[in-house]
Image (cartoon, rainbow, N blue to C red):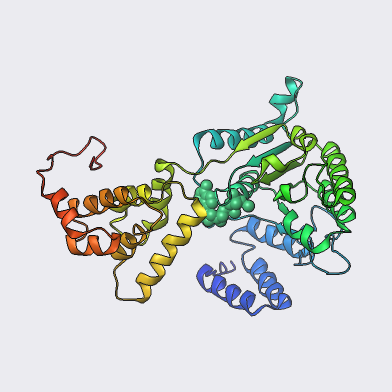
Length: 380
Ligand SMILES: Nc1ncnc2c1ncn2[C@@H]1O[C@H](COP(=O)(O)OP(=O)(O)O)[C@@H](O)[C@H]1O
Ligand SMILES: [Mg+2]
């Protein structure tokens, strides 16, 4: 009887990683071909999937070969790809959505997963959804999330970028991109839609904009039910009403509330910082009114400084509450809470939040209620 072939996943993975990172596709193909052979006996399905991937030969220039033979549209002058293509979208971290927003997104997913149920009722899944909200609250991220949930490639057309570099040829470029996207089973995101979809009576570039809006409207009307068309905007007021109307679904992305910010901070810091839950509520109060991307930037700046310097993360975090945009009364409250929970000394907390030590002392000296609220959070 032949010896079962030995496989060593860790060693193979490392070798593949080393080869892939060196950047020569031919070498990667050799490694994969060998792996397909070696794993054939032990995990035949895996080996077959690998073999068919090798036959398909996706490349950076045409990552979607399986879906379409048409090459990606490229602007002839700049040779820049007009679209970002995510064949298998991944997220660095899980998004935090408001309950209404999450329900709307899950509904899109459900409709696509179960089109038969809709068809029996004489309905089609919603084709086009418009994401509306301020910058940095997860509109683009939601498109990635949807694409991942639906296991479809994501094509992103950033209209702000297209408009600034290609004005004059934008109409034909836009048509080109949308025609391409229609040929594959994908999710297409028209990001920063307001860049193009200005009111048609905009004084500035009337002729050009009118043509663009017309192209866009035609294309949205022609969009096949099999595809998912998404668009995102920070300025819904700038949208042409004719475009606005064409999106069957409008999904609001609000600035996060306290609960959402707390969840986001917990998820961001807890892998690195054991005292996260003691801080997240306080920080959330300090971050009120800010977007997720702002908060994320501040947290990673704090983590970077803490990692490099001698200042512990606690102090970096308290420093975020010094922000002058936070009202003094609120800072006093936060500094008092920090001391009350024994997270930092009065002196440190005062220094970092810009609150006089005497003020903190006078607040914390009062006899505090012993209990904590039922959810374990300090109610002060
Ligand atoms: N709802 C959210 N949940 C988690 N992280 C978020 C969320 N919104 C934004 N972020 C973070 O901020 C970054 C920018 O968000 P993005 O989706 O591009 O915002 P928008 O498209 O609304 O301007 C994201 O990559 C993510 O790291
Ligand atoms: Mg965006």
